[in-house]
Length: 349
Image (cartoon, rainbow, N blue to C red; front, side, top):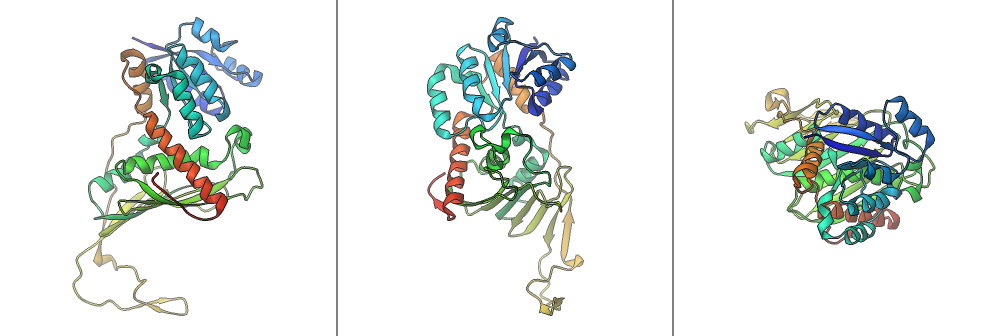
């Protein structure tokens, strides 16, 4: 059976969903709804049916709706369609705050929560799954630090993402993904301390980048970096363990694992470092380490869509749980408190 699905919001994200759905035989794209005439015209040029009102989607008998509008409109459409017993897949951040999410969950009621999913699609990125597998395989011994970076040189994208009232800024745009990845990497561990700083290089009212240091109670320290004003690519991931180091340089999984061989007891000579010498900071010689390829992972790019289909057709629960979504929102809020106060915050996040 084919699931009939509509898309609310036909900007970049909405069009991306439309392109994916039209290539998935399990779905039929009923059409799109957008209040912007320019986006309606774009949908028409792409050969899509244009709904004049949200209620017309219900009249058409759609099984599901994907919400891809600016963040400040998520609440209205989630409540509207969930209460109508239509399955919803909402873009992230699902709400503007944890308080708003709590209100929405109360308004739709426990019996409607099964209709509500969040598009935390980057839980299934190959680079993230590779890091997760490195840790699960104990390839580096005890992991004590992780660095997760997303950097680029094109500034804050679009228009509404520059506006605070619309839920703009890079914490809600990219932080929501990178923090979700880390808490899912260590699901049984609690974050005890957060130290965050925002950057405003572009002069907008919202942050165009940030770094956040997260301290887990399992001993792992994680640094999350998002920057839109970087012109030399930085590694996507670095993972530090007691018995080795791993790096993933790009989205295309360029990278490696480097592990030292057991010491032979021979003291290596110091190296020249600037205007002096150092032995402590000298890297191992090539005969002292082994370089291994990154482990292979199974691509899971359609996992969110597969779950959405199962929600519609078989009433299975959403893959992304409400309490997981709530936790990430609260961590981001704590990070903002730290950035505003310019000092760490502590607690159980």
